[in-house]
Image (cartoon, rainbow, N blue to C red; front, side):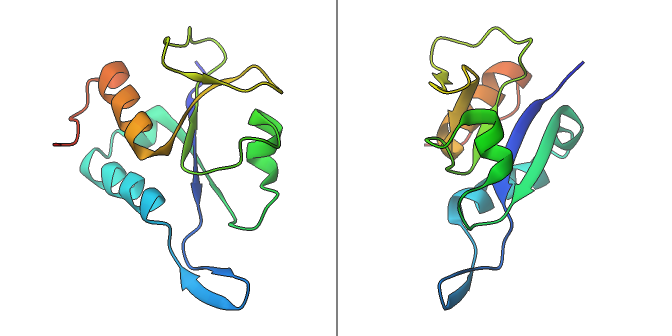
Length: 115
């Protein structure tokens, strides 16, 4: 069985001559992986560099969808109605920690963030 693929940015990146930085949105995903460690076995986690283009994401979702964090659904999964679709590749995905948290809660039954 293939896994959903979670793309995260490598921490400690530079933006021009400034940094090192971490992305707070990606850090939220890292926190979830600490809280729910079994997700590491259920997802394929791919780390990418901050600099664009981000080839692993571009190959999967196209040039228009390089933001991170992004969860790309396995091609064998029927995407829920709220999934985004790549115009270039047709792949279903969720962008940003809120969309990803919601999908993981619905799909895997993990805890969800308190509002």
